[in-house]
Length: 118
Image 1: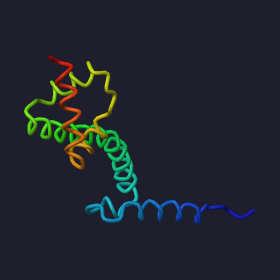
Image 2: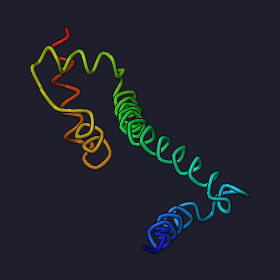
Image 3: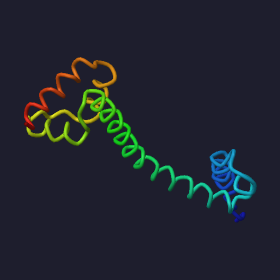
Image 4: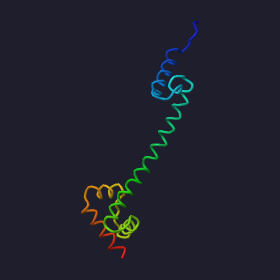
């Protein structure tokens, strides 16, 4: 019985890994053992990055809301506290979008929040 080497599947697997590592620096894109390590590391960092992206967007929204609030004479924390006391349930993403695209509507939010804090 002839010896089976699994050459085609092995080559296909290595080729797929090398394709994934294209553009990596030095041996990380050429030598198969280091390629496997580099791909594992890249996948781990990609997973972490997907989680970090959510926090980065939240920080961006906070900065935008704070800038809009300060232009209207209040601070972010006082504004958010006023919204909570006024039972206005709008998330930061929507508030930041309103602050950028519709300043008049945002001004109404700020006035409502200020009226509930006093």
